[in-house]
Image (tube, rainbow, N blue to C red; front, side):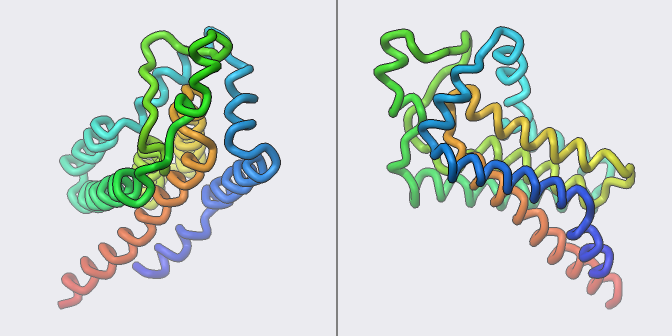
Length: 212
């Protein structure tokens, strides 16, 4: 069990995860939060507006828990692991957002003047919020779900697609002016670490029960 977890932990999809996370961190160092949001906002078009408007729902709490319940009914062990990961992730993110970093504001707060004078690209149907920016809950949720699934996904290339999907959803939060780059990176990190720890201890617990 432990050997399988170790093998999974250094699998090829983690290399993609590391590369994209490093790339995001590099952008953060070079451009900083505000400038990166300004750059992203300048590249709006109708296709991307609609694409990111809807793909961002893959990180919605109701959606990820629905997927977890589907897995729970199809495979009790895998579904339980995903569900536990999501519950821990949700609690931790909400504590960080609303207690620890409650004074971190979203892009709409910092770009209020640009929004009011029409210089900021907005998307119809997307409600902008000002408070509880750090970390990104949508990003953490989609990473928690996708990385959990990667642990038991047998198809070789599906984990790569899941990692890409998670990062695209994370980027959508920046594109939609809901979060800064640092919020997304923090959400990606938290949402990825929790499934690793959950898988480790759930595997050990199940193994000990079977052994006993």
